[in-house]
Amino acid sequence: MTLMQRLLGNLFGGWFQLRQRFPATLLDELADLVTVGERNHLGEVRFAVESRLTMRAVLAGTDARMRAQEVFAQLRVWDTEDNCGVLIYLLLSEQRIEIVADRGIARRVAQAQWDAVCALMRDHFAAGRWREGSVAGLAAINGLLREHFPAGDRDNPDELPDRPVLL
Image (tube, rainbow, N blue to C red; front, side, top):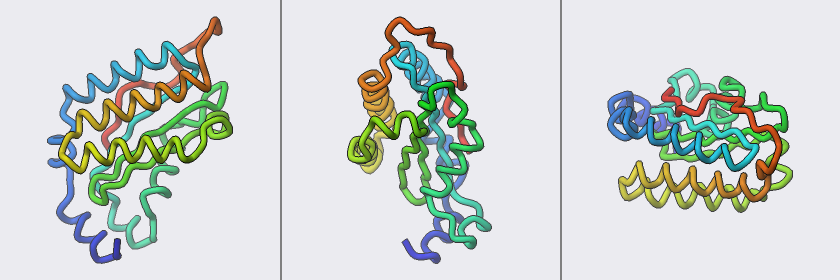
């Protein structure tokens, strides 16, 4: 995507689209899915959606992956006992999905598996199925975490908030 396309996307994207695609009822549903999923694994999942990058970020050369890593840090997804936090980051203006996993998870889950989750979500989103794509993405991530970080008999505190964040 060219710089001009990114700037125009930033001008015409916005909060309205964000709230239209991710209303409070969907955010509640996604929070419940995170809560239920985290009962079966030791991972901590955060879901963040941003309408667009700031003009300053675009001019500074920030891309979706860089911004996802910033959000990962801002939301303290790295701050878990087992280094098993995962962030799903959506940048609506550029139609980008990024998954950032902490080092405990990254050692166990191959990049191809994260890419498959992104592709699954992208297919739904491209068809305007925002709820279905979000639910499918969370289900897939919860499945990977259950496989690689099962809760078993260990104490499993909820270390991070479960409600998605709109940025």
